[in-house]
Image (cartoon, rainbow, N blue to C red; front, side):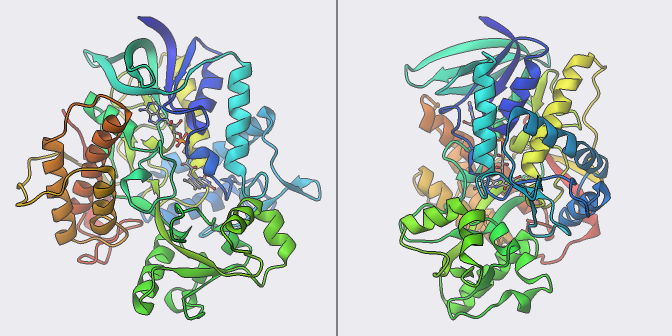
Length: 514
Ligand SMILES: Cc1cc2nc3c(=O)[nH]c(=O)nc-3n(C[C@H](O)[C@H](O)[C@H](O)COP(=O)(O)OP(=O)(O)OC[C@H]3O[C@@H](n4cnc5c(N)ncnc54)[C@H](O)[C@@H]3O)c2cc1C
């Protein structure tokens, strides 16, 4: 069995940045499911948040982050995020990420719920692509070993300590075991749970399933962020239209051309994502349409084409000139706020097992992520994770986030009378219809029963599609069961039968298998 000091599973921002830092301290292997740049990171458009602007401060960044998190952020961890963010931006600059500048200064834009311009961007709306390409070049030139087309299938744990990982090379069908001192899950989120989503095909909740099955704690899964504005064109996969378009002055209109957001909230088009997503749903229902529009036609065309070259080109390829045409949009699943529970050093409750990036739940986002806080979260806690492994510090259990926790197992459920055959599309439709932007006890119970029945009948995973589907069923169950337990509305979790937040729910829902 091959032995490494560090194994990273995943090659998005979290996996690659961690690998680059880890190589200063030992041998490193990166295992990744597709090619190195198959990930969500490369799709990030808006940018990356850090208090580096003249009118900004870490206090303001802290305030905006905790306000978005709706009284569920771990404040100690948010302090760490906002204070360490500027240094991590410097790391990216040193690696060669070409952030956009204006008059010789870093250019900053604003997004929903940020009180000042705070978002750094690169290539206009191609921030994620620039970060991914820069980091992967650095990884290749550092001679870090990267195994592509390799699917992590099982974490090896002995007496509570991580020993390594089993992985399937799905081109050859062969399984190999790799041992390590530190295993880092950087597997991203689970957007493929939902019919309409903005995520890469590789984002199927694998890290959640791997960690849960190994005995790790999974927390806050009911909080799934739906982006309000993904392109809605027949036959075209939802393509994100970044909030920055509204940050630059774009406005939402319904199918009758009416600008509706000011009717819902004073912040109008720049209200938090959950508020805008729900307002759009209500407006779609009211007008009997499957979409609304972003109107950016009043912006000077050079702003649109230079700030949003990707979006401009993508829309043009689909017959829309967004300097003149309205952009049809609707909400889509976007970001997994919950995840594998870690402390502020990226450590889980299993010795030697770490989680970073979207698959981790550090407590930074609380009940709702502030736009552009995820790329920076991945960097801040990846760096800390490596610091921790250097220290040989005494292990301590991850701290409970603000408020308390309730702990749960997945229990058997009532068998439904008829169960639709399980496939990726039936699962995605079920989650979209029953566990989506607006949920209630009835829809959640129905989904929970189907998911439990599907899980009971799952065949042994043998190849990439069956592993992914089985992981999605388990992750979907965790999202649904947590959403059923949380009898209130908070942040990204909205229950039509409990439309208000309740102080008694200022706590976290944790699931474990063991
Ligand atoms: C369209 C879009 C726009 C966004 N815009 C922004 C933005 O402007 N600012 C911001 O801060 N955030 C943004 N986000 C969110 C942000 O991009 C992600 O949260 C972040 O990139 C996640 O990075 P990651 O490294 O954790 O995961 P990812 O980049 O998703 O990488 C996950 C990696 O894990 C691998 N993997 C998964 N399962 C396995 C397995 N079983 N075995 C081996 N490998 C596996 C995948 O192949 C992939 O390499 C956006 C997200 C999307 C989808």
